Length: 166
Image (cartoon, rainbow, N blue to C red):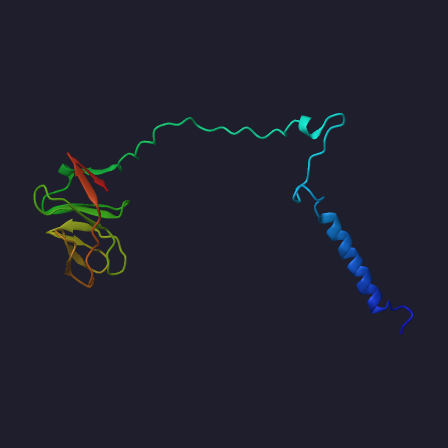
């Protein structure tokens, strides 16, 4: 054996003693379930020791539920949508049409061919400027390709003279 080498058994026993010391230091003191007790100030008993201050919590008084959110901003007045035509709302990506007087429809303004925004509504169709697709104002179906799928319908609400996205 090398004189500088520590026997393996000595290292193992020393390590076991360290683990035991650490375990003892981390254990509970017996009767408090492993929790740490607060020190009792001199001259008082545990029963006389004031409880530690807890942060104050504020709770709002009971009130009625909040009102429903306001309806969406109006897209347009019904008079702004021409009969037999429609209007494109680029920011909202929606087209609102009026195929017959008093009948309002809404469709996505994104062409189903390659995702361009449609450019105009005329002669009973919603027209895409990119590749020439045309969609019918009554139901969004394809009137002329290259698109093969209709424009998806969008939900709108007509209330009085106001049209809003639902």
